[in-house]
Length: 539
Image (cartoon, rainbow, N blue to C red; front, side):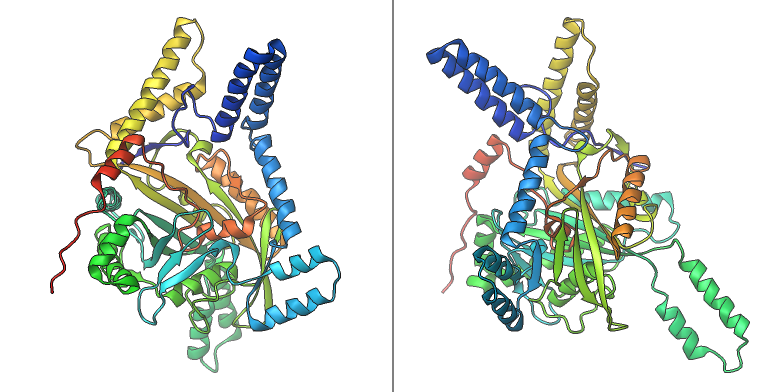
């Protein structure tokens, strides 16, 4: 079975060696430059101040198992600001909700309180901020249009897939499935491709025994023995205990770049050209998913995507239940706490109000033990992490091999230089440098010309859900235990202070990824490539 060397790092080497956060690099650079020029004009006092400032910046940005002091301070400030602004609550916008909030705001004389009351009424939940629809027609694949604040606009389309493997499969079929998925990702690397990456999403739920019970009610004999009926009920309960049902989704992402606009113009003017282009892109991605052995592939309508989002907020709703769903109503009322978000909904079967709490964590290479892994290294998070509903999402953005190979080569050179320098001084090589060197060499081997492999920018998210605070805390503890023991994840980075927005990273809308930054050489080549040839208009 093919393996890949991942973990141990989430960025490339800095000029000073090793992997440092951008905040730390900028802070240290400012202190060094400020101390240098200050010393020229004021002498030793500026030198002392520069040294002290450098020490303070280093300590404030040093990474620990709970993050750096700087990160913790930012989270606290963010949470205070959200509470002050009133964005820790969400009430879906409607005419009635707006009038009710206005009436409540008029009853208070406190200006800040009025602002908080009105800020809670919004058209989109935090996890889907800036989301609309390019195509929300009934019976047609839903094309979501995203314009999050501070991010590049993009389009997304969600597909429901049945999965590569079902039950016990041969080693040959497993290898074919792995190769097929890798080939699909590699196909997205050329600059001519408009789709920039895919999000793989797996929804894990306890089994719903309602259909089994309904079948019994329809076929139960009038003179059935009570013990036999009770025995069958016991069988159902034992079968459902500790088992799970999975739903698999794949989401494609199309950034709205100049290349996209130029290509869309060939299909027609304005938004009609966009829609025709996306019809072709959706068909192309569906063929690629089938070629990757992902089973039955079905693009979701806009209402189906929103139905899944509502189900993830309120797991009491069946997945993809589109009855009563409107494409522009994407969120349910929610209240944030520091480490969770609580959503109010209705159980469609009983009609009773229910409350669900959610908590989301991020998985990065930096927080993983470095080593070789098979494609099944995440199964423990799906099956051995306790009971309850949860969603695992991985966003994968392909990086062209030439760019990834260049970065891997630089990392190898700098790590080897650090090793040689330490050996010349008679010092032991620290474990971090040794691990980073092994990782860089493995990436370089994977990216050798002729392998057909490309680099990848990736991040993972997992959201857990429970109906009580105690249940959510227990689920988080069990997940951390499983992640450390079985998956080799040293730390789950809980996205506290903005959990409502973090939950959107596990919705089928491709949120939460910071696009890979191309190298200077790649930027120059993209500029030289222009926007493609314009087709001649035929009269």
